[in-house]
Length: 241
Ligand code: SAM
Image (cartoon, rainbow, N blue to C red; front, top):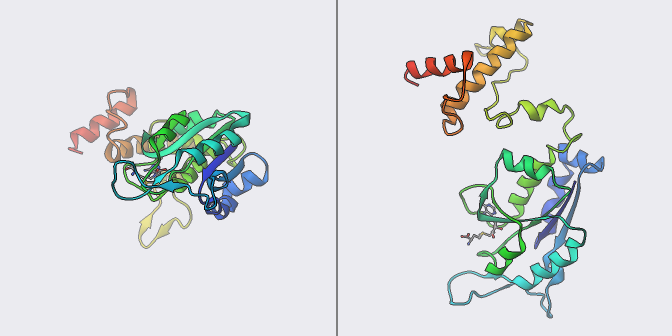
């Protein structure tokens, strides 16, 4: 999969993309990332990429022309254009999965107080990574690339990792433990040491349901479950949780 990033700060991406799993995926050629400097497409002696807002107000606004020219130069081979903005659709696992099916994503990073409204018209999709405002779209672009990139086949060492994780099946992941068996009086649950895989699976499923119901009740109502899953929810309700 190929990512093209339109940004005023291409160096922002150097170190994060050299590290760990995404760095290895790039080295293996599973992911390609090209950061393009929007300033290279700005005209005039000073290559200005921002200007004062019409109608007055504080801060500067990103100009439409350099972004349009950058996109035209980069988009030759097609691709889905994603605009980072706190006004976009919330980024979540389902969207990451949908985007991972694309061959190419072009991500536009805003800066300053925002961008000229006509830049919105260049995008296929506006994406927000949360209900807060960051100083620029570079961190959102990294978030999108990381979440989408790890879903590309071959990027994770074990493909099941992405399947059992939080959100993948609509539930949060069960608790995980590693050695030692006991640390400062806190023990690993017996069932995980039992070697009984059926019991371990049952325990993990129950823990996933419990934590999702308690931590993220917006994700499940409980009504969607049947059998043992439903019993877990009923018991939680009875206990007043
Ligand atoms: N004035 C804008 C507003 O109120 O919508 C916010 C501009 S913000 C300071 C500058 C840029 O950072 C945005 O254009 C966008 O590219 C990026 N950005 C900031 N917060 C974001 C978020 N939560 N999700 C995605 N992009 C964000």
